[in-house]
Image (cartoon, rainbow over all chains, first blue to last red; front, side, top):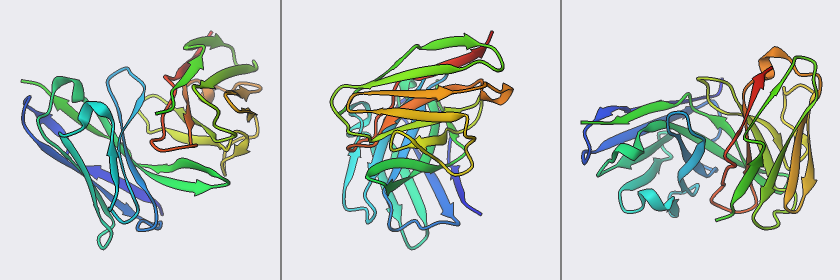
Length: 121
Length: 107
């Protein structure tokens, strides 16, 4: 059974930090890119960060550069998102998702259930 | 990054109707276009990849077409469970970017 289970969300004050985790089971992990995607209340989907299969390469959307860090532990099938200097506009549901390259295209075939992060004083 | 634009932003339809949603890319992406459905309170679910390939388990009333910069998602004979928000996403280059979504509502 395929599962991506996020944890670590909650309510945090502006300027503080939070670390999200995503535990992956039931499917190959160490050979796939992974994404964090977020969805602000009532808004659309926004990619936040992505990491290469071995963790050697990462990339971030402009609004989180220098504040968020994506990482992974392939020995434990875990994906992380360290979020520092949080702002009100970071309030969102955060999803982890697996990237699959197939038929010449990349797509996100498995998603976690989502984890709500609320930044508020 | 490649920008994706969907139209319309919302539409109303009835059970049994046929609807079409359009997605445009800011540059040619060949056939590297994916479609997701998101029901209220749930994670997105992949419907179609590579413009027209149906993901396993997705009903055949969903279909996709297009290439280059313009793509469509068509749903024939709408069912009650199809009323949701639909997103396109380009899978041509990283980062994978999404359209703003199309909300499909019951008329």
